[in-house]
Length: 125
Image (tube, rainbow, N blue to C red; front, side, top):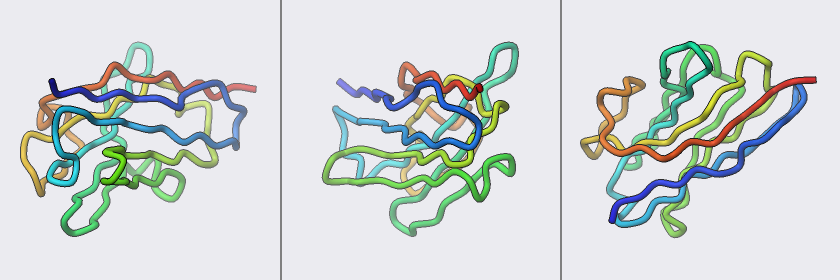
């Protein structure tokens, strides 16, 4: 059964860092594309980052460029999102999701077919 499980969220002070993990099971990550999204209370879900495994191309929302980094370890079937220099406005539930096509990447939730349950990130002093 296809499954995505996020972990690594928590409470961090402004300027701090976290590393989120998205563990995949039930399919081969090496042939799939994963995106990261977030949703703050009262706001729509927004795309944060995605990457194309075959080319190594990465994409980021303008709000996180230079602070967040997406990476993957196919041997562990896991995708990571490194969050640095966190700001209070980064507070949200973070989700990973499987793109409906391989070798495709987008920051639009509609392009993704399977979602994890999310992990909470709270940035506060």
